[in-house]
Image 1 (cartoon, rainbow, N blue to C red):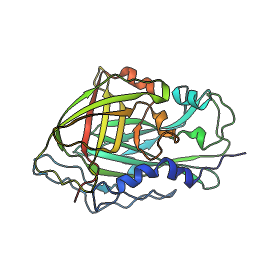
Image 2 (cartoon, rainbow, N blue to C red):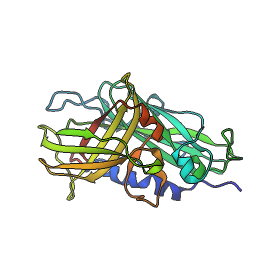
Image 3 (cartoon, rainbow, N blue to C red):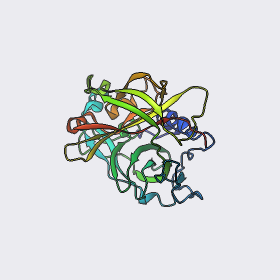
Image 4 (cartoon, helix red, strand yellow):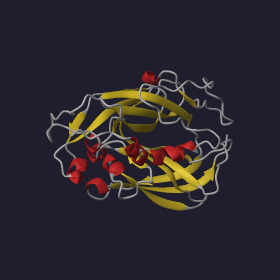
Length: 299
């Protein structure tokens, strides 16, 4: 019997992150989860603004042409820590390529849908920070949770026709917000429990940045892993971490594998994600923080 993709799974797998992002810019809302076959209208903000610090900022908008920022590929089957944890031989995901075609560093969030024959659909999001012209390759969906395949084999096919599409892409500015020292530890833990330790000392808030919003101080941290050639091979994001005060030091343990995103029994409300399997970290020569700022900012 075909496993139907439902909006209830979407709420469990995506809404935790979406609710937090709704408050990201204080009075500025993240776009709503799109329905199949729809795209968001472009906002009136089209040109980067100048900050008091000088560099141009990415526009905050729902882009008019999602395909210019993100494309979804064919379903891929792999064997890794997620399939092992699920007790299957293979796990299947959708490869998504996210690009920043603009002239300023952007936070880019792509909403991708997988729609079945009956109209039910699943939504997942890629949320990465990219310099102008940069590209991110990410893995979305644990399709074995929501789609029935005709066999637990590398060549197993879905038993219903699926339509995979990038429905919407939104962008936000990225601020050079904190003066901070960052140290990365070695990935530790087994399989889906593996984490990347990140120790941050917050030294100062830079001049000219927006004020934080909200009663509870929280920070967002986005990380990239770069291989020996300088290519970005891994992406991680952690939203609304408990913020530390200027002058303090803390260590965050960021999930090191995409498998942690789909372990709902651990902490389904904590949106801290890796966008690839653990094997990608074997190629990382250096980690770097590409976005570190309050989770919620005033306009």
